[in-house]
Image (tube, rainbow, N blue to C red; front, side, top):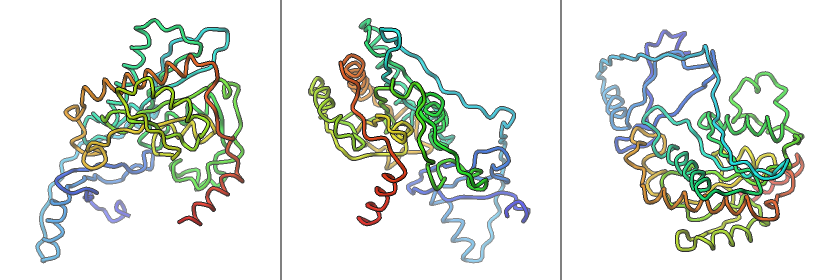
Length: 330
């Protein structure tokens, strides 16, 4: 519509006030990107323009936007590394965070701190010369902000697949708005080799516990492992689930994937996707604590005798029952 109307540019209002410019994205696909230059304004500046228009004053706005979509290479790249496990075909313990961020700032807390903590946890495990029973693999994911694309692609390639929508119009939409996740889930050969995946993606706050994602069988193990770092972490274990980050790619196909509970600090109130999400808000002592707690969880998961307990594999009927129960409670 904007292109047809020969609009020269578009101004959007930030979703947060207080001078914060909170940037978000539109469709990232080739041929679907925004057709005119677009800028995000702070609430206060946007409201000033709106008041001028309401009072009959027509402000003049000059745009100088130099931007380009590099459609010649649409690939994003995950980064993986591992400490090999012993034995011919060892099981795998994974930890990870996402590499990508938004363009308003450098992404210091979303999610450079998560990447730094997981890398430091790997360094700790390497420094103690651990020879783990299970392979310890770090995954630093691309495309998380566009819909968990990197981790979802990794899961689809190595662990399990789900059918894509049959409706071509729906399939053309971003994956995160598809009406159905696709049934049935088809296990790949490595599905039973994955023991657990741990994720960090909620800012620079200390790790205070973990979301069990409805996996009651994991609670005793987590209680034991957090007990080993009781001087560092509260070790809160909630059976509740959390979403919107890369552990969901694993949990969606019935694999144990977990996100840590963190001190919220000002992550969701001031920093998330804003122009002030920078290195300045990374707290060194918190990140050191998080790295030690993360390394402890991974160490235990890689050396314990039993594989991490699993929930029943999701089915179409179980998902429908869960949806109906949620609607009833709402």
